[in-house]
Amino acid sequence: MGEKSKTTLLFSSSVILLFFSLSAAVSSPFQLHSLLLRPLPSAPVLSWQDSDLPFNSLVETSDLDTVNSNTSLGLQLELHHLDALSSEETPERLFDLRLQRDALRAETINSLVSKAVPRKHPRAPGRRPGFSSSVISGLAQGSGEYFTRLGVGTPPRYLYMVLDTGSDVIWVQCSPCKKCYSQSDPIFDPTKSRSFSGIPCGSPLCRSLDSSGCNHRRMCLYQVSYGDGSVTYGDFSTETLTFRANRIGRVALGCGHNNQGLFVGAAGLLGLGRGRLSFPTQTGRRLNRKFSYCLVDRSASSKPSSLLFGDTAIPRTAVFTPLLTNPKLDTFYYVQLLGISVGGTRVPKIRPSLFKMDRDGNGGVIIDSGTSVTRLTRPAYIALRNTFRLGSSNLKRAPAFSLFDTCYDFSGKTSVKVPTVVLHFRGADVSLPATNYLIPVDSSGTFCFAFAGTMSGLSIIGNIQQQGFLVAYDLAGSRIGFKPNGCA
Image (cartoon, rainbow, N blue to C red):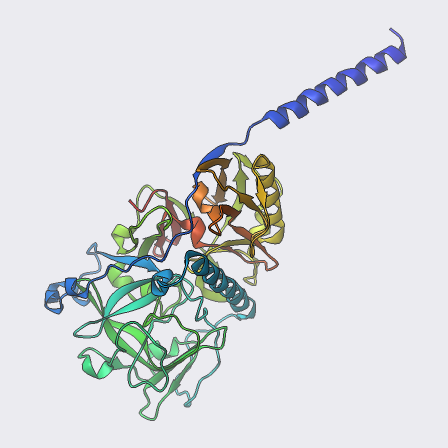
């Protein structure tokens, strides 16, 4: 055989092999999920009855101040979405307001991290009156998407409190008010509580505040400022909190007499962050620094979400990923995201380096209950989006909507098949239900891919992607767990 014939044969063989390789790649199916198409949810109806929580049901044996730290206790609460406080709004308006809060939330978290400097503890005593700094913490309108009802004081006055894993300081509005916003319940009056007690200026609790001062009686004052200019200011004190029939005494909280800005209708905030003044940290000896929540998909279920504290909050069947520590900011829950799969295959361009936190605390990934839409660094998002579009090319596209650039027209359908999405954390692969990444955005059958890109180096795993999972925060074990179908 001549050289020319050999060359022709080799070339033909190469073309045939390439053809079969491409055919196999094209015909290789994406793994698919079935997505049941449900409309935008309406505002949920609040179901709490204070008559179910009588004051005289509180006996001394249920006071957690008297419980040995080795005792396994569990406190369980119902959670409701903020939409319940806007029951007169349409589903479209509720969703629009949620996206507005979400944009403010993400912007402020990024600002917090970028402006943070390494903290030095403890602060020196003997501080002069006035505040040492204006620390931006969370955001008024975006300081949490879920709230619960708990008792404050003795006897307990039941109030709606927003819960926030991105905040530490606990606070409630207090009378007398210099300036207070409208809330659903009467404003808490500390003079009617037998357990209310001020905190001296020189105490370690007062020095733990980022922004504190002293009044003329040398008692501690607190101030928390928010990214939109809102602020809460007042007495820093200790008080008893009541969770159903369980009381927790001597919890440090702010009693806000001056609360200005765009706050929601709840009475205050229960900080669930990792900082020294958060509720999990303060109750570490009594509840072992463990809590979990399960956020229900409101388009699929009318049951409330739930929050659990104590050893029973950590399920054995969850998959766990280690918590990382940011050297300049101790509030947020950082984890290591290694990659993302779409349709059963890892997206090659989504590398661990895109999510790495550097030595100075920049970048990284946080799990956050108050952010709705997951934000990924821009290169990671583009790779994820493009791969998802490829796997869903048979579906009818729709125009972009708000921050979502990948949307579909599912009008007239009851279900569709969509590529699977799996988040690969260190030690934990989390397979998302289709409802956690394709969500309705209007009443016309438009659904959008519920991820977004960010120019910031910080990625945020939001609560839409957490729906249906029991998300377990084991601060004692320095880990976060995920249990699918955890709301049952």
